[in-house]
Image 1 (cartoon, rainbow, N blue to C red):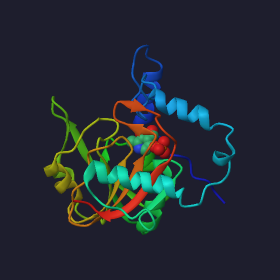
Image 2 (cartoon, rainbow, N blue to C red; image 1 turned 120 degrees about the vertical axis):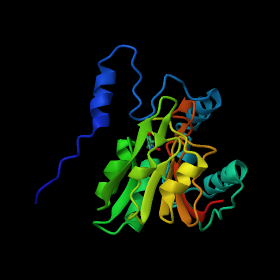
Image 3 (cartoon, protein in one colour; image 1 turned 45 degrees about the horizontal axis):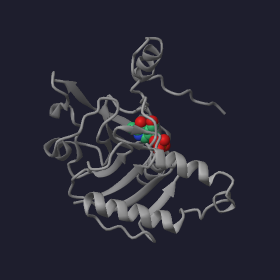
Length: 231
Ligand SMILES: Cc1ncc(COP(=O)(O)O)c(C=O)c1O
């Protein structure tokens, strides 16, 4: 048996460079100097050692948490999810991204990603047996915007994030439509509250509760994975 090594990506080189450069901000995984909100710290400390929070939860997540997630999605984007059949709580966005890829990607199939991208997204495509098909974001002086000419048209599955790591690009509606086409979208909402993909087909949405724009490592280290057509 042979074990394949992880792919060394440009982002890893840049992260190492940032670590070695005093004052540089490492965008590799959205770490910031911001602390979690006080009420989150308080709730976390209060939960330590409480028996109710010290055992395995139901495998698809606590019902109260699934209901809270459904309420938040309704509040954020006005879409109804059924906490019983459409929401699964996972250990972080990474796990739900991998689950979604394993469920949708046929080994050898090309999966659309943006470049640069969060390396955890690119690695998981490979882990699921997919082939990374990159489309380029280019620095136009104002922002990193999509180069429409680089968008592959042969991808049935698109794995995208908005805001997009590490550029921070929030895609315009036109960019999302160009990116997504009629593909199945796996949307990484790790740093998102308000931005959602808009496409003609169903989307699998992976939200991280550990990250929000402007605050890092907030709330629990859990994510939800829901499948539904988005508005
Ligand atoms: C863009 C992006 N997606 C996903 C993740 C993973 O999120 P989680 O910690 O919820 O698994 C990270 C973590 O750095 C990230 O930066």
